[in-house]
Image (tube, rainbow, N blue to C red):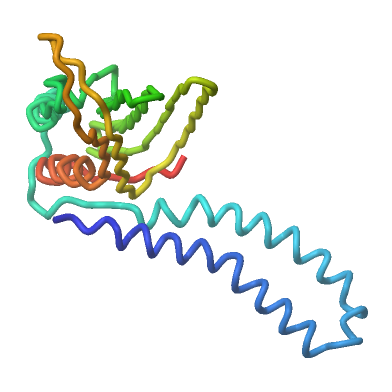
Length: 229
């Protein structure tokens, strides 16, 4: 397995330190100088904006150095067409209703692998739908055999009861580590007119996508850079 989780943790710690370390030093300086701090206020006011610019630059620079995965030396690189074929074969999983969970598309130097699934439920006094979509976007440089990977998430749901109607939605762009499960007890109206009861489940695990995606790229000679924007 490809241990990308540790890279996320290291990146997170490095970026958090951009805030914690200067704040700690600032409060330590205030404690040590006490009433004398006023003498150096002009210097501090110059340092703060300079550091904020530095921290902003480092916030985007750090992931480019840590969130990188390189293939083993000597592995030959394949073309974009071969990658698309391998992705289509790998991501041919179907959901409980027999529908494809994934869609693989290619446009220019971009490959998009989209996972989507939804849950419909019907209870005694309520009905509703929850829908999740995850799009993994690869931008390829065939000259250097480098793939930049970003992610877009769109979730929405609605529910209705006899006296209430609710709707919610969310959007995310970046790369995330996620395990998300929703259970909904539901009545099922069968084609023969009978009614049964079941607990429906909607599940998403980033590991089920990231592991095979990274493996295909690395095993076929491509370097992968994860993009947080």
